[in-house]
Length: 315
Image (cartoon, rainbow, N blue to C red; front, side, top):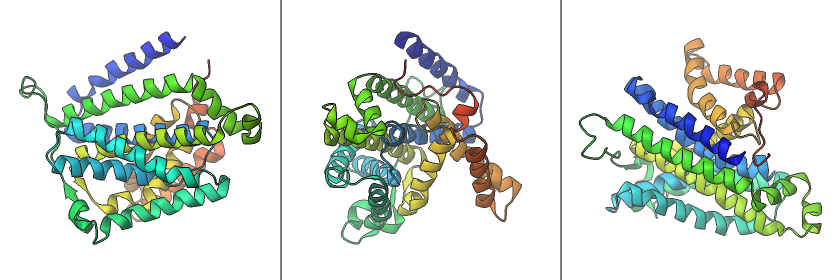
C-alpha cells in the first residue's frame, strides 16, 4: 500500500514536471508560488489537521524562512546551503517558542500563535535589526540559475519550478512516512482526546512540540522558496492576513487530508485573481463568498467533495 501510494505521488510529480515546457513564464511563476504555499500548508495540516492544535501564526514561520534564506544568501552562501540552514533556524525558533505556548489549549493557543503572526513583521521593521532585515525596504536576492549544462534549454522560471517541485515531493513523502508511523498515531490520539492520550502513555508535551517544529520547518521551506522565487522579502509580504489565508486555504482544501493542502494552495493562489476579474471594486468580498460557499456546501473541504479524503496516515 505504501509503495503504491509513493509511486502514485512520484507519477504525479513526473507529469507536473513537464508543465513548464508548455506554459507561459508567468503561469510557471505562479505554480512555483503554489508549490511553496502548499508545502507550508502541509506543515499546518500536521499541526492542526492531525494533532488538532489550532494555529493562526503559520505565516510568521513562513516569514522566518524567507528572511533567513535571504540573509544567508546575502552573506555569500549558495541557495542550496542557505535554505536548509534557514529551516534549521526556524526549527530552533519553533522549539523555543513552542515550549511555553503549547501548554495552552484551544482558544488560548490560537491567540498565542495570533500574537506571533502580529509580532514577526513588526520585528523585521525594528531599527535594532534593520541592518540584517533591511527594515521596511526588505532584502533583495538572486533567483537560482540552472546548471551550466542546462542554461541553453531551461530558463530560470522553469528551473525554480523544478526546485520547488522536488522539495514538495520530498516533504510529502517525509510527512507521509512520519504520519504512518508512531508519531502519526500519537498526533491523532492527541487530536481525539488529550487526556486519554496521556493516560495511554503518550508524552503529550513531546508530541505537541514535534508537531509544532515539523509544521514550522515546512513553513520555512515554503518561505524560503517564496524568497527565491520573488527575489524580494519585505515585512508587508507577511502580514497577519497571510496566516489567516493559510488557515482558510487549508479548511477549503480539506483539513486532515493528503490532498487538502495542495487544493488549498491552488485556491489561495488563483481564486483571488479570478475574483479580481469578477469585481475589481471588491475582489476580496468575492473571495470571501467563495470560501463561505465551500464551507457551507462541503464542510470537509474540496477534497471531501471530490471523495478523495484520505486521512494522513490512514491505511
